[in-house]
Each structure stands twice: as C-alpha cells, then as structure tokens.
Length: 419
Ligand code: HAM
Image (tube, rainbow, N blue to C red; front, side, top):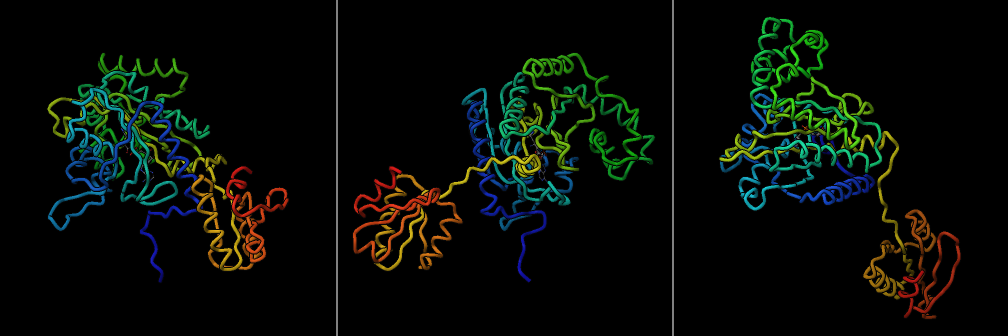
C-alpha cells in the first residue's frame, strides 16, 4: 500500500498554493499597516511551557499535545498554539526592555491531536498577533480591529464578532466559586466531560456542546453579576470603542475560550457557513501569562490567532478568489539542437528582466509544445526551429490574437520585452 500522510494532516498542492500565498501576503500587509513585526519561534518547545502557559486543566494540554522525550531526555512538545512561545521568546530576549510596546505577528503550523473533521486538523496554520505592554482597552480594540480588517480585506462577509469579559482575577475567582457551588449538586446530571471540568476548569463547562449540559446551564449564575467595578468599566470601554469604530459585535456571556491565560476581554469571529468548526479567529487579553511563565514584572498582553484553513474554506464557501496566478509571459518553443541553445539564452535574458518564461524540456514536436503553451495560458509564444536559426530570426505569436511576426534573434529580447 502506498504511504499516505498522517491522519488529520494535509498536503498543500501546487494547485492550492496560490491562495495560501495570497492569504499570507495579505496577513503580512495588514500587519505592516498596523506596525506589527514578524516573530518566528521554534515548532518544538519545552513541554513545561504549555503546561504552565496554556494550563493543565485545558483540553489542549490535557489531551491534545504531541509530546515526547527526545534522545537527550528533554520533554518537548510540538507547539499547539503560539502565544506561549511568543511570550517565552519575549522574556528570553528581554524584548520588553528594548521597547515598552511590542507589536508582534506570526504565521505557521501548529499541532493538536484532536478528532479530525471538516475544518479541524491535527496540523493547521495560524496567523496571529500579540500586542504587549498596554493594559488599556484601546489595545484590545486595536487587535480586534486588525482581525476585522483581515476578514474584510479577504472580501469575507459571512462572519460575526462575539465578545465577552472574564474580568480580573478577583472577579473570575468569585464567579468560579459561585459556578462550582451551583453545579456541584448537579454533577450527576452533567456530561462526563463537564464532570471532569468541574474540578479543574469549571468555566469551560459554559461552552459545552452537550444538549443535557446546555439545559442545566440555563439558570446558571451569570458572570456579569460577579464583575467588580474595574472589570465592568474595562469591558464598557472596549464596547464603546468598538461601537465608535462601527465594528458590530454581540456579547456572549458563555464565551470563555479554551485556554487558561485569559482575563478581561475575550473574543471570537465565527461563521455559520462552516458547520461545527465555526471559529475563524479567537483571542483575548492575557495579563497573567508572563508572570505565570516566570517574569518578575507583569506584562499586559492581548492578541488573537486566525485559522488559515478555515479562512480558506470560508473563501471557497463565499466563492471568493484571492489567488494571483503567475501566468507565463513567454513560452519558448525550440526544435533542434541549435534552436535549444538560442532559446535557453533568450529565456535567460527575459527572466533577468523579470518576466515569467517557460520552455519545453521534453524535446517534443511543435504541435505538442504549442498545445502546452496554450494550456499554460502563455501570453506570447516564441518559435525557434532549424529554419529560423538559419535565417537568424525568431517567430513571435500573440496568443490572444493569433497574430504572428518575426524579428532578428539579436534584438529578440528587447523586442519581446517591449510587447
Ligand atoms: P485558539 O482559539 O485555540 O486560540 O485558536 C485560534 C484559531 O485557530 C481558531 O479560531 C481556529 O480558527 C484555529 N484552530 C484551532 N484549532 C484548530 C484545528 N484543530 N484545526 C484547524 N484550525 C484550528 C489560540 O490558539 C490562541 N493562542 C489565540 C490567541 C493569541 N490568544 C491571544 N493571542
């Protein structure tokens, strides 16, 4: 049997790469417009980074990590997300000391051992940003705005923005206690998954997909009632700014997100067009992460990450194309040994001038080469055979009009470039 890729992973084939590249280039442009600089961190990190950063009670750390002990007895993990790695790098290189505000973006593959389904993979790509150094709501809104601009820049319309607040540590603790007290007597009725979460991560029960859990959660205490003054006014300010910018949103008090590091604002852009895997992009504020990772000083941070495959699926669903094809400017046909030399030299000159040039490398007959030029949608075809070599010319065919002309071989490059 032929070997296939591992379950939940995919190849990105040449026919698909155009849209991947176009999307990455849009991410790059938008990041630059907001003054964000790219950061690249290793795909492997020490396992401890995610245990401490993302949190032991999370699904990611509890059951989805690709972890192993290497030959040097080091416990390593293939990164399941990038925020912890970026924070680690910022601390390791003292970047906050170089500049009190860090605006960073990243793009790359991540690994989570989840059950694969449409829109959910074991290797997937994220584009994301992290804004470090500001504890103020305008920075939450800056990153939300950036995500919004990305989605709009792609031409997408079928999405909406959900926001919520997890408050400061004090409000969160008060709510966690109330939630645990409310759910503990009902624990027999909770799904197995939620029962496990009750002890470790009760907030996650709020976004359970189980129908029975949903019923039990109907009259659950509301987070809003446990927010203190600071948490409430922070969230109000985020909403006011979003409204001032004309970014529509709705508040979802069940949005808690799957990672432990969040405080205050959390948000998700989701779509109804992709079935169960509806989250396009998620993020929030994480003021406690750096101290969790051993920083002496707290570093306020906020960011998001978007799932690249899901953006591409939604583009297809909305019948939008972002691909910029590099169609050949010239297809050079050669017939015979002498012509092949002429064509290789001409191709070199034309490529040096920045045009896209293809030649036949299978020494096929004129008809087959012509057919390929047509298939590749070459703009201009140049024909050099024995007869042309003897006459010191090349033949030029405009593929759109079918018009044919000839020009001396010495001036062929400049003539072709002037077309
Ligand atoms: P996350 O919600 O785990 O957040 O992932 C962000 C996005 O990655 C999701 O909204 C989804 O589009 C995509 N994604 C996640 N898992 C998969 C999967 N198995 N297959 C395909 N796509 C997937 C984070 O990772 C946080 N680090 C985001 C963040 C940055 N928060 C603050 N800064």
